[in-house]
Amino acid sequence: QNKPHQGTWNLERNNRSSIPSMGLSNEKIYLAKVIAAKTSGSISMIGSGFIIRDVMLRWQRRKEHQFLPIVHRIILSMSIADLFTSCFVHILGTWMVPKGNVTMLDESFLIPLAAGNETTCNAQAFIWDLFTLAGCCSNAMLAVTYWLVVCRKKSEKQLNKWKWQFPLLWLPWLLGLAYSFIFVVGFGFYSLNGAWFCGAYVSDDIPWRNWMLAAIAGIINVWIILMMVLLIKFVCTLERKTDTYRRNRETREKSIQVTKQGIWFILAYMAALMPAVVTIISEDLPRNFPIFVACAYPMQGAFNALVYFR
Image (cartoon, rainbow, N blue to C red; front, side):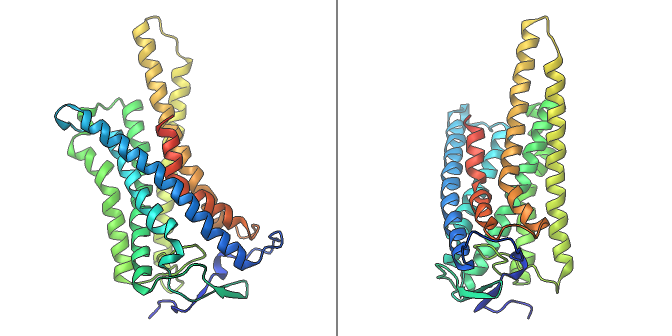
């Protein structure tokens, strides 16, 4: 009963800025946002595809198909999540949204390229919640893994135990599934929410859901930032050390390289996420700022590929 009307979508919540937008109409801004998301999503999907291919080739080359290092398996998990998000959320975008009008700042116009129905919209919302949450949690677990390997000196044998495998590899997907089933399948809330895709409906009628979403996002991001600070501190400590023996020096340099890669993965995650966060915490932004968000937010897979293959 709280589900929004199928024919009209109101985007006032995410488009309240009074700053000019260089003469662009709201309809042109929305169309540019849709096209930008499809372009960035395509680039990101290609990047994630290359990562998945490389990880699978590494696995095939291992003797008797032994397990890959835990870091590579988490990167594989992240890339799979981004691949599905890029394809079904950013590239398909409004193609899965029901046809109808969208309202932005009292200006109503047809949703660009809309060709979906209620079923495709629900499916897109489910996919977005599932793979976005799984991807974000996997990013957090990757940061934790780098901290465990570099700072806590956990061996691969130790990390292959179930007590580490479950939270690092499987918990992100279980959380994503639980969240998606509760709010998309259970409640059936979905809307555009100012974006270019259907997502779980942020409603004032169920404020506890909004608080839960904010709490999950806050915990993930604070945890990732904390891990980055600890890794940076560790690198600074190592770089100040001087080693007499060559073996110690080589070990230290390898630890620095691994730590820096972990930091770069965290920065890649933050680069894709931060523009979207800015739109949530700030209302007084240029009306064409969402175009920049549509360029940056879908680029997680491309940023990951730059770090992975650097």
